[in-house]
Length: 466
Image (tube, rainbow, N blue to C red; front, top):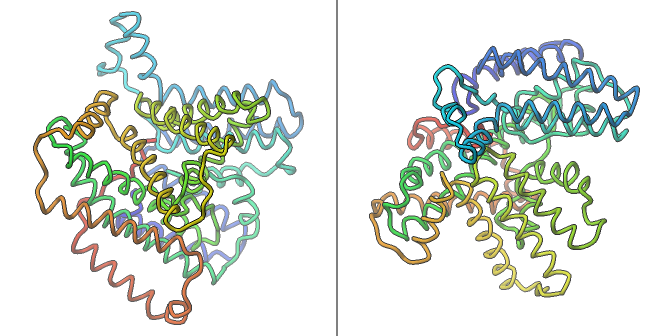
């Protein structure tokens, strides 16, 4: 059930009307839980049963941990969750590696077998991290009171953010769950976030994908300028796709009376790689910091160890994204860049000028650091990545996309930049505030008109595969 589909629009409208028609708190909670179950079950009934079983298993350990902060219990439940994630997400990846090293034909044939297929459950990476965060917080005594199984299930299953985040913490959600009430001030931002998310996804990300995917699938055929353009194209595609999902998720949550965390803060206006990771996929960055980097020792065990912890944390973060060496390389690359920035800061090698011109240079640097990483992330294989970088660095020849497609990609990337620039400013100008009763309905009409003109066939969100 895609957020940008008419089916989801009808589903959410029914959920919304019924939710605010129910007079009591308990009824609203039950309806929210049932709606979330239906939302996930519409994808797969079998994996819904699996998901509910995982929630029940975790709640059992949470109940035990509230009574006894046992290290054995926390290790057990963390390992069980990681095994569950590993079997579905990394089974073929590791068996392929083992098969190539051992030469065992039985393992080599697993992926092509018609009788043995492992399908990745929707949202398993996101809900696993969210559950682990809650369980570890219980163990650390950061969750003082035990909640009911229903409240825990709603927290994990909450359908607006279930598929691709943001990864919520208990303090982000549970206080509002226990005090559901209509908040008129949430209506305008809710509708605005939904409209903005649809704009990013349908008009920009999907159209960029149609133009650049053929190049990514056959990079050896194209010339260096086309490849360089689609590198930029994917950088803005994934931004509009993923932040668009988050905008719609936040908008739906606002309309249901919940303020869920912000996940993107104009990341391509960052002036360093570190600053960029404080703005991009914020809830994953903070999760990796709190539940991986700090437990590994953080910066408490000396400088060299802190650099190694950064690299290891981001390498594992890359692996979390998927069972592909390109993701691991992507994570390792960002970890190394962050470690190097920390080294430079220690020796005062970073110029601290606050001039506007130097700010632009730093933004240019941070954006291109991300772009090079995004190229690793999008490449189908390591060899495709090396092909792409070789073609760009050697100004290699090849075929080109049409002039119309070339210009369209540039326009879409520039429009994405303007949207991000607008989101950078937290305060809305007074003239917009005064005219919002006219401007908001007008913007929705314009958006619908643009979608009718320029939207192509709906595509899944990029992060659905993770």
